[in-house]
Image (cartoon, rainbow, N blue to C red; front, side, top):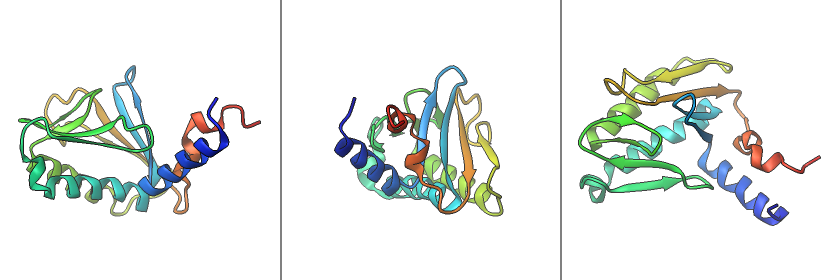
Length: 149
């Protein structure tokens, strides 16, 4: 079991990221949980990644979050699978625009699904679970609640 110092560092990383994520291979979903503000941080990650010319080459990628398994990857076509959210830089900018539009007037408690509107025959779905402003993304991490009571 991780020490409290490790758990606190993990909480801090979730809060800096702005949202919690988890991969559900059975449901074929990447689930992102956060407030509208927090989920816009994911949009901002996509924009930042797509704005970096270093990421132009196929197979370039970055990992995000405390467990580092959320991966944005440059690829020749857009998609989402159990490994990454991927596409050409313009595809990733388009995904950021889709996310921005969907978050525009959304209310807490709404579940947004992005799949075919990003890529035809997309293997996995990107699920945005919208919570109240002030939502603490660290509170959604089941690893941090183990042994807490």
